[in-house]
Image (cartoon, rainbow, N blue to C red; front, side, top):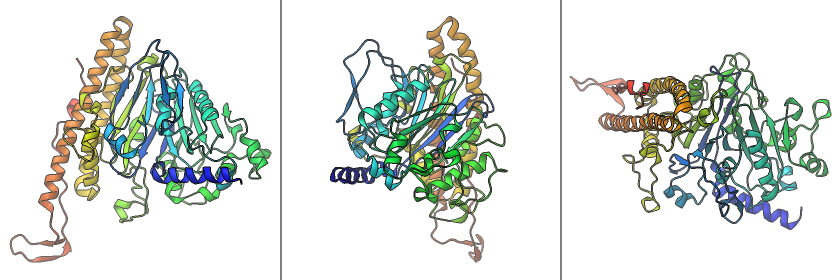
Length: 529
């Protein structure tokens, strides 16, 4: 290894430790033949330790403006020249205060555009030492914080988006090892980015599902109907002596670019629980030595609400549940460190302009709520769009911004999930069920209205989604107040129970009564103007 390679690796390790190293996410894919309603679903939690508030944004289409560029990295040292026309898209970027604190780009963690294309990046993953040494990260290369919006503003199909991402890696290199999910109304793609310039993308089967933590999972390209790979993907591994061949003497990408040295319980256990939840008969107890395949068949068709609950999963009913066992060493899917969690539901049979709905949970998912934003909407609600300015950095404004409300609600509920968390989660579950049903009905109505009055259709969908978002924020604030009040009333450093009449201490620890949620859930059934 020459000095230039050593320096590049050192710089990239430093960057990883300072910024992206904590970005530990979980990804989900549900094929249209595996979902209950025939939609394609992708999901991801966007996780890191700290307070980095996010918001919701609708970026409009721009026509005939050729003198624009977009950064490809956080340092804004490399730029991509945008075409004259770029496409409308929805996103969930950092607030200005968060960007000031973390020094990263906007990170539109998930984007859906007007052509029915959606992308989420990244689930951070890890390559082995040999792969990184042979083709080190490029410190000025692309990052997850800039790619979603850059790719989606210029792509009309999922395949075109994959090709765009590949060309950007070819041109600029990558400063990270990432996984992306990209879908349109007809197909889905999974992309693994291994090091500075090597990547592999495969078209996913319609009848399978996938759940994965922070680890690569792709083995053989021949398992997939179509693939797009970097030019030297196999040659680099052969020339540097780390290629591993397996079935029918085909290159095993997982063994070659990752291998057992990268397997960690931290990530692998989340991959396992996804398989266990969706295919319980096929997968038993967790083992670090077991290979959990990228694609697998679910035991039953998977609903949108099942995916919502999967994104909240905390290993309930297993020996690994931090809530039920008190374990402090468990990294769960439903972590309280999520900056946002999102689910994209893509309808194959609707016009592209209304096909994609993002179900957005600002902040952590366990005791947060998913609300819809359809690509047709002209804007999100006032509260969900609100952007905390830089001069409000370190101000925890839960009465103004939904992210802070849901963040604190999760923090408090996790201190005693039986007393506070379970009632909150039950309420949100009912609300989400109503919203899912209401959105399905709204899409039918708006689809018909689009044929005669597109402007009215857009207004109707915008009002519909905005009302649900604002209702969720108001309920979130009410729930937060209820939990705060109950926690204050229940506070007592003496944990033993006591007879209220005689003041005699019991020999058992006192049991708190769960809070009662008395909010009106019926508005989530949804009626727009």
